[in-house]
Image 1 (tube, rainbow, N blue to C red):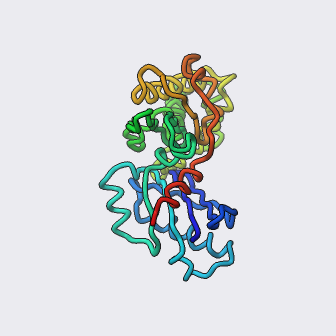
Image 2 (cartoon, rainbow, N blue to C red):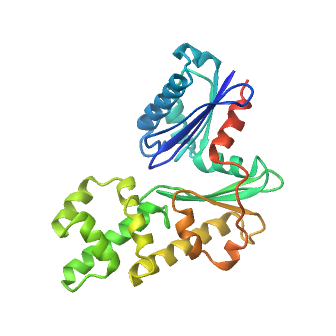
Length: 283
């Protein structure tokens, strides 16, 4: 038997393939995989990663019959989206959960704790000592995902449009966005085609200017407040340890409250470890 783990999000995905004895056979990256926004695209990404993993491990496609997979995808926490993805079928047994649940399993190896994810979007997922699970957020941009990369990028673009309309001098954040996207007409043309990942690609500009731009600092402080709200929604008294994960976690950590920072712990494993746990549980 060989085991595949896939962790898919709005900006990209990762996969890890291991053998029966746990030896690493392949590790690779792929495109976005969001079961809510684009289930067909997520399905293509998963199948492509599985095929590439077998190829990298020098296994034929017929090895799919030996494969067991644990898959975590953004948006897969909703039953409707999970059913839409599963209706497309895969040529190997698998178990599908949300990317947040996958991360929680990896971070705490199935034990109690909360994961707070901040990437393109945001979500908190907890499991307590009784095994009860709770989630908050993760409903997709632009409806939710406050504090995430797409939210930060959208807020920065709006502030830049306002500054350009006023016609005065730009401050560091709005200047950085104007240099990246251009003037008002260029921004509007860009926005017509922009996806959540495109807005999230602007988040590093907010982080980079956080110490010199009052606007950026304000956005980052708001992001920290949104993230704490998510954690307290699943664990109001902050009893559980918290693993803060995702592409923006390091940059946003200083903007969390001291009480939340005091609960942060290093994860015991990554999301792909959580996927391997699921894969090994399959018959």
